[in-house]
Image (cartoon, rainbow, N blue to C red; front, side, top):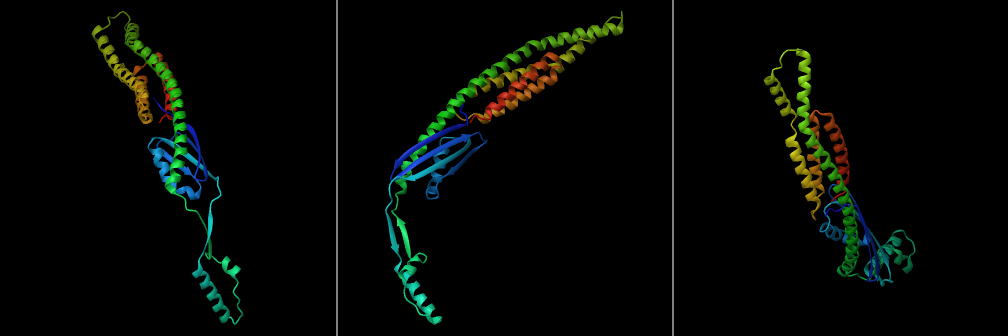
Length: 292
């Protein structure tokens, strides 16, 4: 069954002192494009997120938004760089001597100098954190895929109806085609009769002219190919694999055959049906732009 490229999914989970809220939305795109927006300290997971999505989705532009909140106070420790503090102190003493200025060690000023005192947070187990985030990601992905499937069902129903319209239109063309030659023959006879007055019409020459016209106006091959493309289109819609590109190709082929029929038929009735058929085919083309 066809799947749409439009969808939305959401996943939420708590664990290891964090609350994860993950939203994912997708729209149509020629290829697969994934944009991940996450807090800077969680950017380490971006590649993993992309790989999970790539294993499931083949086409579409996906945007993934991750919001992270701390649910527990993290343990923090202050680390003192003693050697750096002593080095600062000795350097300041030396500077005071050079400037012939008095110097008294000020521990508060030393503590404020770069990297003397560093606040360190409790180290987090990245792999354990990923297992939690992955659960939220899979929940969002599952919701998004289900929405794409539901939308795909609606698209398939609409496409089936439009295919039925096209098939009906070109069955009418097939029924109309033989009459074109008959009507041409009758019109040609009438014109020759007016031109020749009472002179005898050369039946052999007339038959030859009608035969040439019939050959030029024949659309049998185009109708056969058109029917074949429509059948392939129907069968492709039943496939569970990504079908958007194949449907796009079939629409191009259908358009080619319809244009050829319109140019060869040389008939007002068929020309009208061709215009209607192209209008219906354009609606189909617009719909399949959103199929994966």
